[in-house]
Image 1: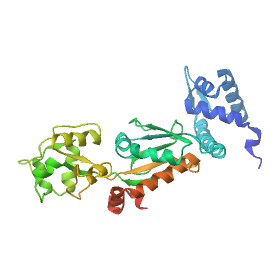
Image 2 (image 1 turned 135 degrees about the vertical axis):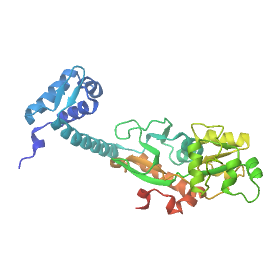
Image 3 (image 1 turned 45 degrees about the horizontal axis):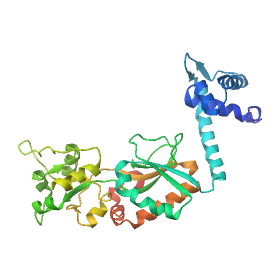
Image 4 (image 1 turned 180 degrees about the horizontal axis):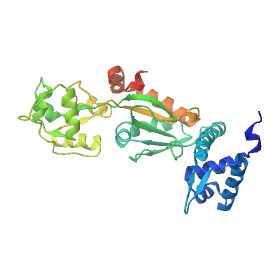
Length: 316
């Protein structure tokens, strides 16, 4: 059987993939650096070779036909793999490593360690982004992400870092008020900071039950990040919900206390990158360094030693 690719130029597939991905001949032309007429001509030539339409031409955009959708899926996968292979072959280990991650992870765990990475890899510059929007690693501007979740993202390779479970973290003043032998139920009368839903999850995990006559009082301060809530607890002599790994330094220095080994949350932190770019030198260098840092973190290792705290994908 003759090879169907023998009669179709790679340039036509490249143009089709860009138009399908962007939903516009004009945007595809802009990305590829050619004219809109050239994009239209290449697509029409491909349709003639296949003897069927791949797009429905609309007023200001184009939409894929069923045949176009099928070809687009294969073309995107092929072009992504080809770009990754070319990047690997031309990669010198230099350049910029773009990382997108959660704000609390960046502030509390990663940023203070990145200097050591750049000392070990002086030819790799680092760009760190903490936008809450989940970046598209397959088509976006980022090389790797550190995400919280269950570890399943199609097309991406996810490597477990450590559980993202949360627990109660107390200021020194709050610990003094709780006394030498506190019980989880004692926190019903503590100065609690954070979202009421998270506190309800923690009380449930701790086995604390309360009826209509004795509901937990609503927390007085809430914020968008663990960093802000824990800072408020330290400033106001209160208790907050947070990750013991994110605040491992504060716990080790005696500024925060973790009174109970009670956790909630099924998620974990993962290093994520496109599967076909796993051998890219700057990604491999960052991955190896990151796992060395996790191995040196006693708070992370403490949670990793408890398999019940890991999501299912991490236990396989």
